[in-house]
Length: 232
Image (cartoon, rainbow, N blue to C red):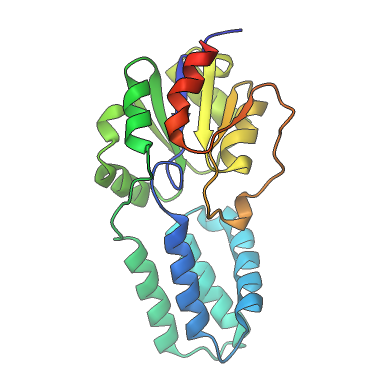
């Protein structure tokens, strides 16, 4: 079996906290619209809007904020006060300046593998926001490459791993999303390592490919260097 030479890391909720800030903002959104929709119904309508809009706005805070505004207009039958729209915009702006919180073992895992492998950050979302988070994380200098993509597919992984290494056959993708980080990396011919996070956006849920020979699941990033060593 070909030795792993290139390792891709997801960013949000793999290296640093992200979803918790979306949940906090969504709770605030529910409070603002409490007179118009029950929290569960509002969450359902917001997720439907996000699914519709991801092709228009992409992933990230800006698309989330626009989807909240759209949902507010829908559930109030276009009677939402301008003051509520202003508060939704302010909530999105607060998300865009929130300090980065690294997850446990994130720095240690990247540092350990950067000395022996090519390590690439592969993340999707808004370009400016992802660049901000990477700069604040203090991890930027550890990566041999940074790829901020509009979506994560098998073709995207194949191209990135060919450009930064020997192709997906000798590459590994590590992340908290089965749908975006693991399954398409496996489809491209690489290894897919699932590191679950307590909070994962419903859009990213998928069935675990437990029977795939190149699938692995780890409790946290602290176990990653040992796994990579075992595959050598």
